[in-house]
Length: 237
Image (cartoon, rainbow, N blue to C red; front, side, top):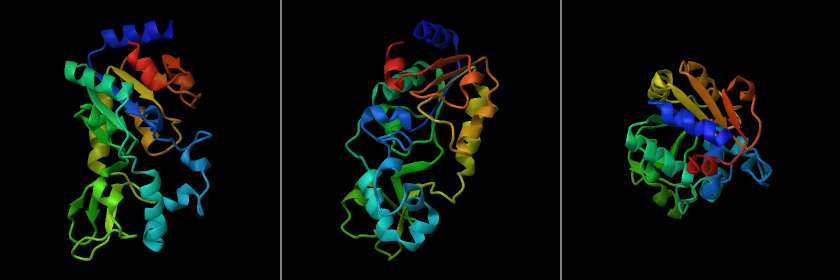
């Protein structure tokens, strides 16, 4: 019944925006952060929140990159049914933007063009000295415990670490598409990471749909809530 209701909402909408979190990529084999088998429950010398902070990156770069290479560069991951369906909707002109908290680049790999990466991307890494960019493959295969550019500068992933702010241009673009949408689908996110989760308040459209395996603080404010895997739901439409 819920699937039919969602199908009807998608069919009657002309400007869909999708807001996704880690749960969108778990079906591609990328672990999320807060579930039982997520990154926050795995054993390292330091908690992931500590490792993925700006302070830790500066003070303990070898430990940072050990974790980064091991857990944040799943370069063999492929887009799943959710990524492919969203790219299809964009091609059809129904979807006006994807706003994602993920850094894996799978939306673009599926063919999506209008993607706002709130937390950056592992596919962009830059020299902090000269600004030269490096690929995720370079970072994964570098034998240098702390990757450096030819100029001697340290290379930093273009991802937003704890203690760092979001990119203003990306946030502005995300707010713009969210405010223009008539249907917003929020999926695969616990809606507990701010300021990203706060962007939902800019939605002024007709219908707000939430698809997530577990309950969230926003469930009661949505027109439709489906507790299931994102890819399974979208591919069934």
